[in-house]
Amino acid sequence: MAFREEVAVVRERRPRVVRASWTATDWGRSALISGVVGVFLAVAGAFGTGEMPLWLRLVYWLGLVMAGTPIAQLTFLVLGRNAWLKTRPWIRNSLGTVLMAILYTGVVWLVTRALAPAEAQLSPVGLFPVVLMISAGMTALHLLVERRRAQWPDVAAEKAVEVRFLKRLPLPLRAAELYAVEAEDHYLRVHTSKGSDLVLCRMADAAAELHGPEGFRTHRSWWVAKAAVAKAVKADGRAILTLKSGIEAPVSRTALPALRQAGWL
Image 1 (tube, helix red, strand yellow):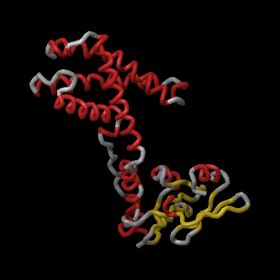
Image 2 (cartoon, helix red, strand yellow):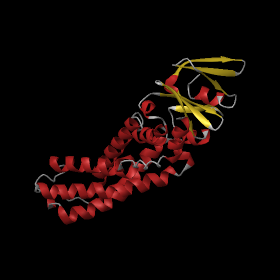
Image 3 (cartoon, one colour):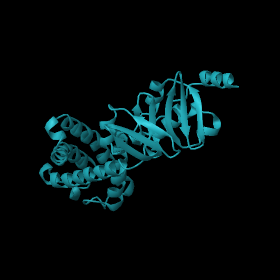
């Protein structure tokens, strides 16, 4: 029976790659934010465009804000390469907003002359404060989305862990909470909330598949899930992690500083 389980693990098909949504990219999120802002400005008839038909306002505002997406991305990409600005996000964001508005004013002026009514047309100098206001609002909205996104769970990473590693486990354990992975010769003993079992796999491969903020390779023979740690004890420059199941996982001296910095100890 054990031999059949080992053969099943060896012969399992490689899982398909989990692809992230297009909104997971900076360009995708910027385009989505620009679209929302463009629809809002069109419906509101902002800045003297209320006399235009709704369909023309949608074309006008969506075209303008979408044209600003590559300008904004390239502007902040260039500024992000400066080492001094990298450590000063407020200066980088403020400077990027102003530069983006300067470049964008020319685009807005050309489109406005072609589509907007005469009463809505302004000179480039008159347009700049308006463009700067919109650019600042979109930058602030983008930063807010990025800040909130940093607090969201990484669904793609969780799916990758599930597909790439948990598929190795026997069916009864795949839905269990993963506690730890322990190397035993050429096998790995996987500890879960529903018990443990052996799988044929190298620790290096398992650690690569389970790489992420929710777990850590605490020892050359152990990988431990952060949520599974019930208690951590330090003594004589060493540490022991006690899991929810009562199993103790060692922490090597080399892993100790990283675990302490991550707040495990």
